[in-house]
Length: 367
Image 1 (spheres, one colour):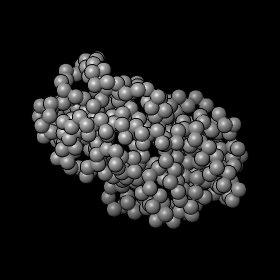
Image 2 (tube, one colour):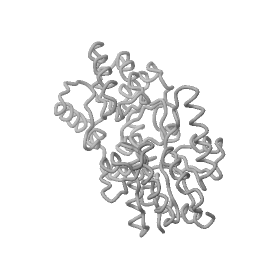
Image 3 (cartoon, helix red, strand yellow):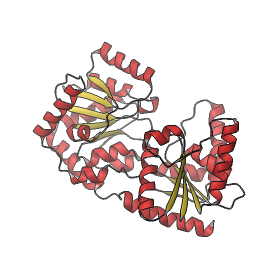
């Protein structure tokens, strides 16, 4: 089957998933053509991608739209990842008879009322035109149905790192402590006590101020580490605030491989205002790290019953959950074990690709 995958601008989870899905589909024999922008192609090493992403009302963008329309005509299915990709897909396939699947990975966190109104209108256009809309979390499925999706279903997104993390036995307490000390030293951090890890973009949605608030009241000696890059101005402000308040929250920037950090962490924390099926939470659970996350989006589906869920923006609840895990060895060991057990039950990338082949066949037959 020939499938056109449209990947909107991404430096994180959407791109990671779409690239992994493409790899597995190709290994199953499908002809997959990827269309994206230069940033995403460079970030994920998509050397064979068609870099035809429109960049505004220019002659070049018009040529790219025409190229994409011709390419879509040759496909049996167009699969768009994300809101922008979904809009591009339904616009360029209009009148072609080619079915479109739109995978929604993120909630639309629009600002003022004009943006919200515009966003809802565009969501309705995309949902109404797509043959199938999938959501990475159950709330995204409900949102698609609310906007008039013809068909909507849950499509869990797996992290490609989970199988290798499950295959490796968790480090002992002593090994974890030694590994954490090495990582911190290599990144210029002088820390003491257990390591509390966050892996996240530096962005308002991640609400990283909550980490500083929680670290200031947790009452247990620990080193809080944030791995990731993003908004330079926000990063500078967060670093300045942590330094001014004398709070042990350290921003070490992007790391080429998060695996050593995950295996060395004592607790993993994610403070986002919204997430779907966060890849980093899946990875932490597979690595045997107790997890504390905000109770939002698809995080409850991942964490409930095996980790700690706290209200969004509640630093005191966050600090209390972290304190419980750091001071109760039995609770920490139980959370680590049950998290790995749950992670072992999830479909991996190959199984996910087979499920997508079934969706493509179903839509292509009725498209």
